[in-house]
Amino acid sequence: MPGDGFETLAIHAGQEPDPVTGAVVPPIYQVSTYAQDGVGKPRGGRRWIGGYEYSRTANPTRGALEECLAALEGGSRALAFASGMAAEDCVLRTLCRPGDRVLIPRDAYGGTFRLFDKVASAWGLDYLPVDMSDAGSVLNEIANAPVRLVWAETPTNPLLSIADIGALARAAHEGGALLVVDNTFASPYLQQPLALGADVVVHSTTKYLGGHSDVVGGAVVVSDPALAENLAFLQNATGGVAGPFDAWLTLRGIKTLGVRMDRHCASAARVAEMLAGHPAVAQVFYPGLASHPGHEIAAKQMRAFGGMVSFRAAGGEEAAVAVCGRTRLFTLGESLGGVESLIEHPARMTHASAAGSPLEVPADLVRLSVGIETCDDLLDDLRAALS
Image (cartoon, rainbow, N blue to C red):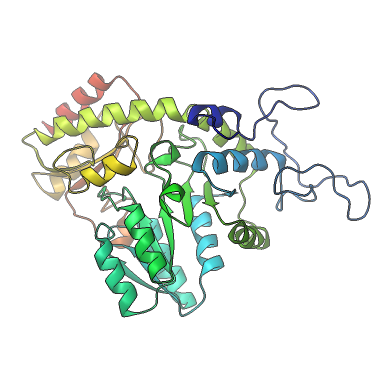
């Protein structure tokens, strides 16, 4: 579908009407195995799938999701996983070997940090947290010692730092490394890292892509077909694939991604502005604010600034915890990116695994996932909780 707009691709890419019944929504192929027309002669197939043998290897519903994700990110191929962490693990084990070195964000997601610190390091992988908003620092670290991967998030979780994807890609490639970008916070609607020079994009499709807090999943998208084949081999060998119903739910969510993100972004901007002027708030983290150090880069590489807002409570840790317990519409819970608004205390919840490490988040930090409810109601809810 070359030339089609984002919203058109979200609704149609990989989702042709069923050839047998004409159903406009791809069926849920809840099946483990497939009848073959002869030994070594599987039926069907699509794009990079030569035929269906066993659903760990390929499934028509998962294939539809993967085609859609590849189209949305502008990649040659996408792979859908059972979770975002399964996707990240597959990337690490495909691209790295024991003894390799990876640069990660100084404020990476807690689950990503745990994967590097507790799992990959035991396998012999070395990692170093760096400030990804400073491409010069990344280049210096690559010059100090060989680096296999530069692993970036932009915006980061939960401090919403911004990295210049193009600059990171140039720094990584100059030093012989690959650039991986976690695009979960932005979604492909707001940002397309492959077009900016990244080699690999990872997602927790649980978040904005699914969008309704009813499915867990992950994805990897790449431009290089050879790299895609290597990733697909390990995905099949280790089996962390998305199930057909999960794939179907994610596809359903993607159809409205554009209109949802427009609303998330508009409301988050209003929330950030209100918080920036509130006496109970010491600092607001939102790249849409002109005061944000990454504002200009975000404006250059993103369509809008996203639906996530974080802030530090002026009263310290206990004040931050108290705010989390006083909201009515912002549900206290982990995860993000759903139609409903969420609030959480990262230091005690999503980023507890980083406690005591260089990636430890401020104890007075509150993270908001701004949903698509009536924005005035959300503002009133936060004002009441802060008061």
